[in-house]
Length: 255
Image (cartoon, rainbow, N blue to C red; front, side):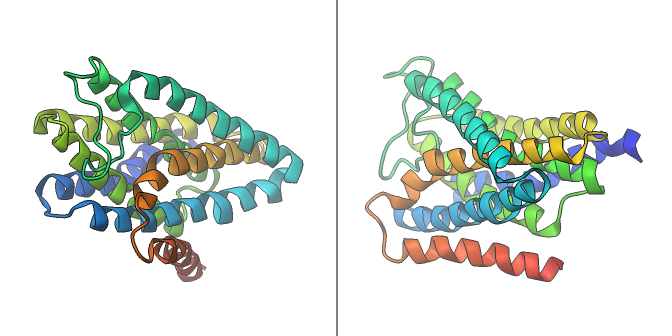
């Protein structure tokens, strides 16, 4: 069982990333504009914030204590934010914007931005891959609630990012290639996490849980909330709270 944990984790990563694929296709072919995309982003951000806080952070506190969790939350958030700041200077700051509110960098105005956006988009899937790998190593697979939350959260990310890439003149081949790379990267991170963590003690697992939660919080705040909050469409705060409610319902169903 342990020897196949990495393979199972890769499969869970692929399943969770279906939200990226569906969102990318919707971004290419749906007629949604900024207001509708912002509302979808608000729900997705709420789901991911709830996952990081209500599931991952609470689990980390239970295994390693509040102080240790705080330290690794900060490390995870800081690591993502530093990487994101580096990418932002290279044109990837607005990679999750839909283009109807804030336009993504174009290659003509910001050479090299296409590569930066691709790297940033792929990087955004790393925290989820880590979580899926941990859960597979620990219990044979992720909780249904976590898997569903990632799928739901990934949809608006890809929806908005794809719309913005298209508005910035990126080709469909580029756009679909970026999201395919992100799905493969999530699976690879999940597989590597499971392979390395399968024999890890609970105290060490809590550190990785907290690190992933911090990175997920940072990713959500820096790349999703700006789109959800731009011009603050009516009821978006309530929709974000609805994301929390969705996770609580999923956790209730799973229990």
